[in-house]
Amino acid sequence: MLISSRAVSDRDRELREEIERRLLDLSARLPTSSLGRLGRSALAALRGGRVALRLGRGGEKAMPGLDDLVAFVSSVGQLKGMAMKVGQLMSYLDLPLPQEVRSALAALQTHSPPMPFERVAGIVRTELGESAAPLLVHMEPRPAAAASIGQVHRARLPDGTDVAVKVQVPGVEEAIAADFRSAAVGTSFVGLLVPGASVDAIVREARRAVLDECDYRREARYQERLATLYAGDATLTVPAVVRPYSSRRVLTTVWAPGLSFDGFLATSPFQADRDRVGAALFEFYLGSLFRHGLFNWDPHPGNYIVQPDGRVAMLDHGATRELDRGFVRKLAALALAVHADEPEELRRAIFDLGIVRDGEPRDLETARALIRSFHGPMLRDEVLAFELGAATPFRAIASMKREILRLQLPGEMLFVLRIRFGLMSVLARLGARANWCRLERQYAADALDMSTHTQ
Image (cartoon, rainbow, N blue to C red; front, side, top):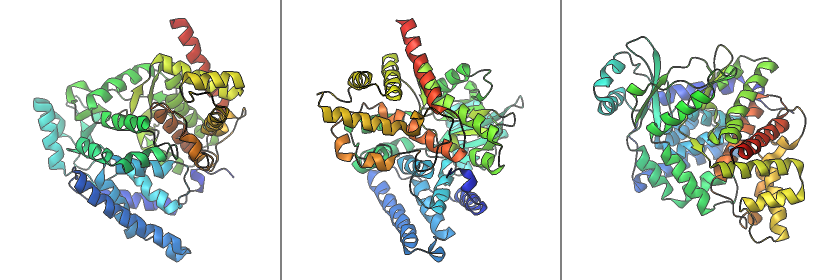
């Protein structure tokens, strides 16, 4: 059975909206020391255990109450940083979670206990100096969104342009660094993508990538590049950066009106509209990787909206990264070899990426099985919609845990895997249909063709 947002009840949407409202009514100072975060993490775990205990009792009466869910989600949201990112991942990846818990965690995609507006205004003044005053005159005190690293306020420039002002939570960089000093955090984050792959190189890449998100100047540069790449595109748009009102901890962009992912699904869109949005997301997250070596590795539904003209506006670009052209070529060769399932081509691609080094047949076969699991239903050359349970093959991968530990997954694979698993999970909820197999093959072929012409 196709599982998409059509299986999500009005009660689930109401639950999420109520939790979002309650989260924005809370406020808490961010703990940044390892000890302080350990204590808050223990509290979040305790509240999560209370929810799990009620679920374990079974029956409708055992469903966790709103207060239990709010307490659990707010504990995670108050930690910001990695705890919240893990919560976001769990909210949309294809994991065996009760719908009530998934709906509650989904609130973390755009909401968490925010900073008081007085503190936000102070940060803006410190960061922007004289440019702050005209921005603050027409800035809404209540945030439009509050996520793992910063919160967004709607404002209006002196020329009448509506803008989104993202302000970083003070101390969040130190909090993330403290999180990664705990080996359990990095392992949990990576384990949501590849069970058993607690490879040091991947954990290091995860730490560097998340800390990179704290530099809004870097995000602004990538957002401008992506806006140029997709200028005039019929299905995608990237809001422009407003440089005079941006800094390392404040990022101002043109406001993009539209419906959130869940808001769009709540309209019961026609299949053609679902397919159009799905194709746009597939293009942005996989097409840009293969053709430009530039990609956003965080496809969670809080990062884009559907605009009134039908285009998908991509809002958050802190998780954008750039891959070396040589590595992209190797990824493209691997994708084409997996789709063709040609043993010699696949062997060569696996060796080129360093996944297997000693040539043992059992390791080659493990790598082949693992990589085919990564691709899952994308290997089927037909028009299809992803089904829940097939979108992210965690069980199949988990069964290979010991074998995976013998492989040498490059650190960059973390980003590729998060895109692939996250995107398939989103497309399953969306119920979008396309021949995803041929789309990916074309992207990979384009990457090899471009590589040939630039050599």
